Length: 478
Image 1 (cartoon, helix red, strand yellow):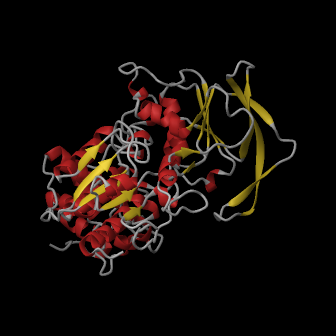
Image 2 (cartoon, helix red, strand yellow):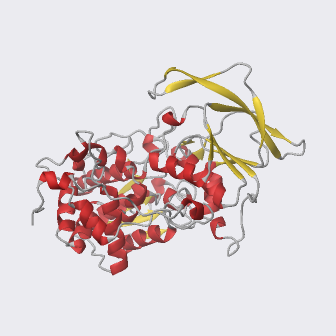
Image 3 (tube, one colour):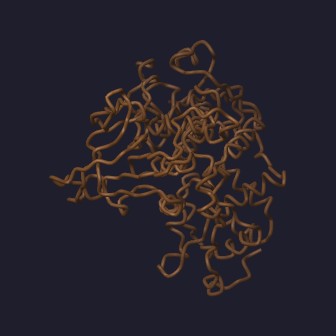
């Protein structure tokens, strides 16, 4: 059924506002901040879709969900069909509905907002609603799986790229095994994104749906150490391998004092909180610095930095500082994450850069020396380059610091697979149209190829790779 409203009537509907926990309450708990749309709000929001003849929003979606049809089905009240439609293109809908930067992708090209007078359809809100409806109503409908091909595929890493490849290839009839180095599945989804943005139960649900498709999941296997890629292919009988190990090697700033106790990489800090469940203290012992009443400084301006600074607040920090060398306008974090951090009480110190961490002479952090910055000409990222201001240094007391300035490629796969070509930064080189590497039968995608990026871009790479892998497994052509 077509939307009964005229285009003018649709334009008069205000964009739905996501219900949220109050900032004064959520800053002291790890419960999810965004509470989700009701069925009524979701239907109202879907009614704003203009049902464009050429829906540009689909082109803006890395996994190419049929957003137009999704909105039509929601308008008609066919929620089970809408949820099943989304899952056909996206094996992790509850996750992407929460952490995908829709404002820079599908919603950015929504024609409702083309004139600048109206806000785009809240596509992400609708996707999340459908995934939650599917889970809560028990109506999860698995895509149809094709007959077995007799081919075995190994997926190295259980983050978003790896899980996407696993789901797509399982639907195509291949026997898929996912190898995860850690003791829990999900990669960055479980160790990197806090509970208040992405509950672990949500990740677990989407992963369990993959096992129902026949995907085998194996933990505590470090490919490159426990077993090599060559051994998987030559001894274990895998016809193809997809490498999705991410970019988990922390970067630091190269300033004095980074070796002091109390200085964490964002990877370590968030892994200890998320994977080792420091957020559930005292049910779990707190495997991290006691933040209660302390001064915690986070360095960086991306989503990971926001996650760390907001986490510090929830662990009881007296002051949670977010220190960034450019202005707030240049921060690469999502606008919503910046807004939430400010609402909760994170103190932004912008146009400021650390020059040294200070210690007590016994190896423990006590403070940080900072320098004010100005903005010069744009650099290669298009953002104005930060320039130090002479004579502007000052010091503040800090009990713990979290460095969130990016990550690099984990070197293990490259070190143990000599015929796999890497670029000068250590990332795997691929043909971007097929995700094929220099080694026959080996594909790669996600952050191990691009460097740190978003969940949905990794999933998009996974979908491209799955299609290419299926062609290879079917024809044998390389």
